[in-house]
Image (cartoon, rainbow, N blue to C red; front, side, top):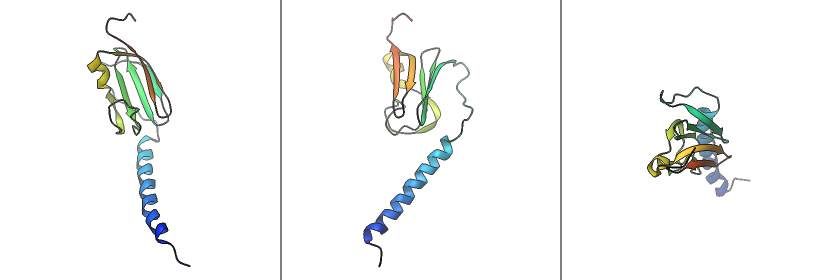
Length: 117
């Protein structure tokens, strides 16, 4: 009995997926010290299953980690092991007040310009 052509086609795809997952896990598997600009003071932090978000005292939101579903808020599905400011909030004049990460989502509470804190 020989293998069918379908089996031969699946093997390379499965190996490629395993390699991609391994590379990602090797970057994210262990806690690590993180450098934010020195003038930023973190007031809130939340972790999802593979991403992290922080709110600064100045109301900025920084996110990093796995971004496949757009949960980092940067307008794409890119992943990053370095924190990046969510520029949409800055462009809209919004200040982040709270952040809660779900497994594949990020929820933020924002203040509009002129709202009392």
